[in-house]
Length: 191
Image 1 (cartoon, rainbow, N blue to C red):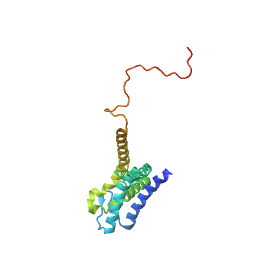
Image 2: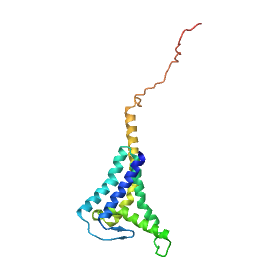
Image 3: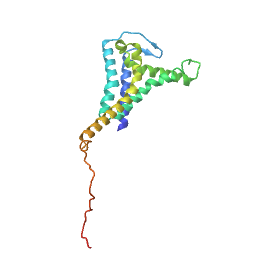
Image 4: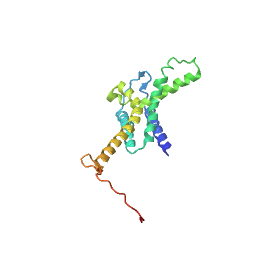
C-alpha cells in the first residue's frame, strides 16, 4: 500500500506539470527563457502548485507520519536535477551523432521543460531566475521537512517527559539508606 502513495504523488506531480505544458507554450527551456505573457489563471495555478507541492504536502504528510508521500515527492524532485547533471555533457549532440545520445538529449530537454513548466507563472511574482530554480527546491524540502518534524516531535516528547517525571533534582525519588535492611523471610524458617 505504501508503494501506492509513492507512485500516486510522483504521478500527480507529473500530471500537474503536464497540465501546464498542455495548456501553454514552454517558458523555461534549458539555457534560455522564451518570453510570453501569462494569464491571471496561470499565475494563480502556478502559485497554487508551488505552495501545494513545496509547503503543504511535505508539512501535512510529515505531521501525519506519511513519509512515503515525501519520498515520492523527493523522487519527483530528482527529475529537476537529472537534466542539470546530464545536459551539459550532451550539449554538442547533433543529428550525425549516435541515436542513443540524440534520444538522451531529447529526453533530458523534455524532462527539464516538464519539471520547470509549473513554475513559469511564478516568474511574474519572484522573477525569472528565482522561478527557474524553484523546481530544484522540491527534493531538499521533501527530505528536510520530515526530518525537522521528527526532530521537533522528539524535542517536544523529551520536554514533556522531563516535566512529567516524578524525579527532579529538588525532589529525588530515590534516597540513600543509612541502615542496613534485613532481607524479608519468605516461608517457614526452621532453626
